[in-house]
Length: 484
Image: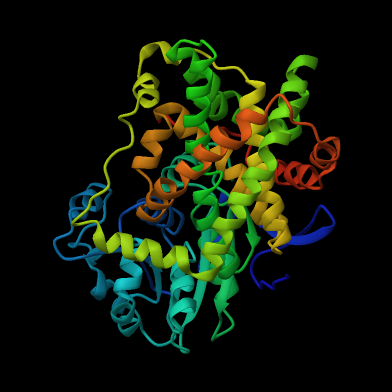
């Protein structure tokens, strides 16, 4: 893929055996945003859930003095109205209003309501859009629904995507840190799904830069929704939850006390392993171990890779076929009758909230082998399916270790699963037990007997390590301050 921008310079990078083009962000580019958004007088941010608060506030600050208004649109009577007001959006100054009124008044509409709400209200949303307006999405779920139901967008609007590789709180927190470190933020991918006036690319890049993206990569919304929905069910949420639950019970059977078992399983992943990957790449995890630790890592990796790959292929097939999207829509319609309950009631997550678990966690070689094998299996699958390396690395690795896992470490995995988007919550709850089962029934019983030098050599020699090193270097030199 390659794109053309009349406003922002692009840069070529080599990832593995491929080339891609990126745009670097930074606050020095904010002065170019009005040119990239020429003709746009108001940006409507619709919703106030996961991404919307961060993006609305970041856009408002980045566009200050430009004459472009950022307005938030909510359902009449929304419980989030007061939260938007607390963030400085008000009806009195025209920056807060009923969602369909805001859509009708806006030249660019960023649709950041829940996935299920986008589907349920799609016809009314597109009817309210101005001819020639731009519709922006931060997730390709709606594309997946339209594809599976034989629908399409109106032909008189631009449709673009900007997809931050981290949750909304990370998008806001790193943007705030970026006031002191130019370019601090969450990397984004961008996509142009429909361009009716030749401006869609510059609009998408401006959106990404304005919300703080230090580096923006090109993708398509179809590729994005497949990797994103699969990733939530895989290494980002479902897999880490299932792996942690299984390993915790296993360490308990090995005679470890409850708090030690938690440190060796969940906290080893969210703290020590994630930090090592963030700082030096996946190979650094293996290379940091002593000889005995490396042997245990290799056994765990070899035992885990194929069971993880098998399950991840099933998830991808379910996403690609539309089954997973239909499952989310159906489950969302049942939530009023059958609400989701928190998962934090099991022993492990109660232990997680005990003061004794605030100790430093080390890299446990078995935990590392299982986790890294699952991460590699997900990356290899996406590469096999034709996804670009930038998307694979940012969405399956960097998003995990730089955005989600630091919050999991601060609050624990159960808290994250219970407080993410409805689509992600449903997916994690559905697939985490499958990962738990795979580790418990297939991986751990074969741990001592596992040996496959060729499979492990593939891990050591993978092009993914070079691609990851390039993308790690494209991040800002700051770590997210989750306590802020």
